[in-house]
Amino acid sequence: MKLPAALRPFHTFWDSKPFEDLLADPVSLPAFETNSAEPPPPLAPITSALLNLANPVGNTGDRAMLGGTARSLYNVSGAGVKVGILSDSFNLRSGYTVDTASGALASGIQILKDGPAGGADEGRAMAQLVHQVAPSASLAFYTAFRGEADFANGIKALAAAGCKVIVDDVTYLSEPFFQAGGLIQQAIASVIGQGVSYFTSASNQGTNFYENRFTGLATKLPGLNGTYQTMNFGTATTPRNLQSLTIAKGATATIDLQWDQPFASIGTGHASANSLGLVLYDAAGKIVASALANRTGGDPVQIMRFTNTTGSTDFRLGILTNGGAVPPNLFKYIVYGSGTTINDRNAGIGSGTIIGHEEMAGVNCVGAIAASNSTALGGNGRIEAFSSVGPGTILFDSSGNRLATAISTANVDFVAPDGIATSVFSPFYGTSAAAPDAAAVAALMLQANTNLSPTQVTAMLAASAIKVTGPANGTGSGLIQATSAVQQALAAKSKPDITPTKAITGSATPTSTGGALSHDFNTALTSLFQDPTAMQDFFATTDPSLALPDVQITTATAFAIGHALGDTPTLIFDDPTTHLLA
Image (cartoon, rainbow, N blue to C red; front, side, top):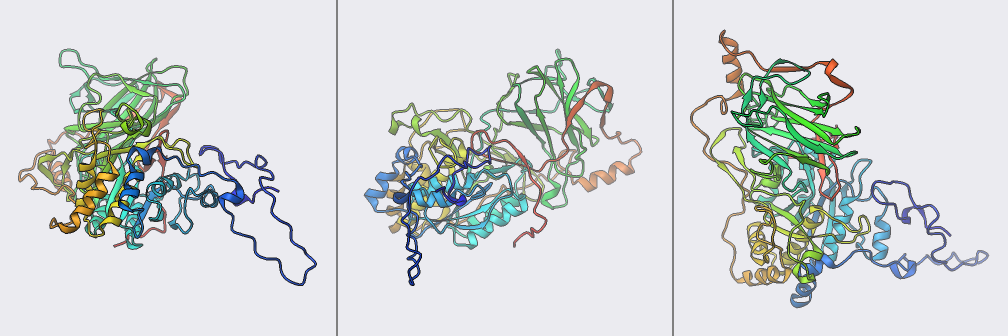
């Protein structure tokens, strides 16, 4: 017989077709007499022994962190601790039943809300890694792929369900680079204040970013009409208004550009007083993609997405002012997706590729090292090249006021293993795999000492870490070790923590003077309308004659990305039923 549909495994995450016939008759169940007056006895529960299933989850990550030694030495397994997971989806591909049969997961996982169609069940892979290290911890799941507001609700819902550890592997590209206080950050601050230890994956962008001061040129770009300035990627003596990018054939590059202005969506009465646009040219000087929405009065975010269907890999990027009267000062863009190289000697220098809630003090931001690269497994101790880096820079407080002194949070905090086999991805690479490993060690610690505060958990994990190598601001304290972390947790039982539990979200004294880069937007707008000599606002429009017929235009900013290696940004549509929880 065939396995019932609920028990049939699926192809890898990009193929939703089930194996229809490959597992025909894997086991024969006993037949029952049908002419008996007595009903047949119930079938025994489906177990790994009955189905001859092997647990597909590898133990290399557990070994790299000395998890087994910690469990044996200190008699911990995560019992009594609930871990909440936020990712794309959990059981859209119907693999959970097989996972419980094989021992990859325990039954009874609480699914508060599963993801929308198209999810890869990355959350179930994360759950398997938690279960490998902390097998007695209970688990809960909430999707993070129904919009930022619902992501924030999910954080609060998991805490309300009793989770003392929460881990996510999702970033919204519209989360602020330079400001504290977004919806997700507010929710995290709330649950940390309730004693929850929060973990997030650091993303997989490595050092693929460009950050600089905006230096405007009056020269025009091909095919763009209007009044605007273009970024000078060169020098005063040798100016360049285009930057070279190499984009592999078939690759999709998603460029997330932000600049130093406050976010209107945070709702404090401040907004961006200017706007930057993006335009991409092929080697012949034709426009192949653009993002030119005027963000003045909104959020300082511009996202451009381009899939290279051309025969070339040679492209040029232009950044220009397309709104407001005064250009921004600092800007940064991060490239999401593999296959794109920024051909600029200044690329990869600055505040890094962690953004939004990854930058928060109080959040455990976790980088990745291949389990096989850990010294425990004979490796060289070097982190993954794709693991994102800090230090992050906060320029505005949660009220939208420019800080007198920028805050650099110095994340990544530490690293944990990836490259571990699961039933969903085999192996599971990316910081998406590292973060649940670290969260699982926290569960062991909290079983050993239920009174640990989030501050103590973070400090002990950092103190447990052994040295690793890699890019500056990417290694944190090193590779966490469960033995040392649990030992510290037990030792702290006689030394209660007196540090108040508080998530730092970047509040500081704002500057007392205004200026074009720090004033309230409404005040600035009013003054411009009242001043007849005020400079005309920047704007730019595309000349169709100099653009390819299939030019790729991006206007949306609501993209989310999971942090399994190979994930690409997904356009997210907010759940219309979402009401932000208090």
